[in-house]
Image 1 (spheres, rainbow, N blue to C red):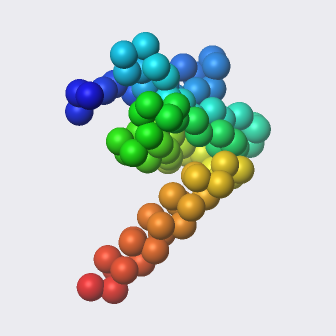
Image 2: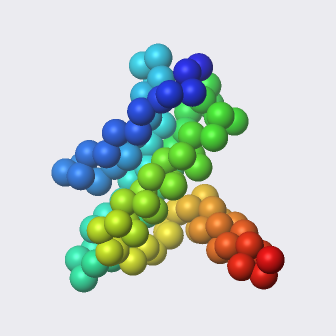
Length: 96
């Protein structure tokens, strides 16, 4: 698998996706208005698991939300855990 996979953001469909050899991993969100995104689903097919794709999709979605001034509701349990880990790492770095 190439390390240079491209993340595509389809704003109309509210999805971030990575395609690899015809297989797609994706993250879906809803724009709830009032500058709020609900990230409600990540999916990585079995053949692509363990390659860090869910984290790449999640980070791309969070970067998009941050850059556009959105707050994020992490309805997806993976995204919620990812955000908690990132907050914990940021807090540890600030203590140094």
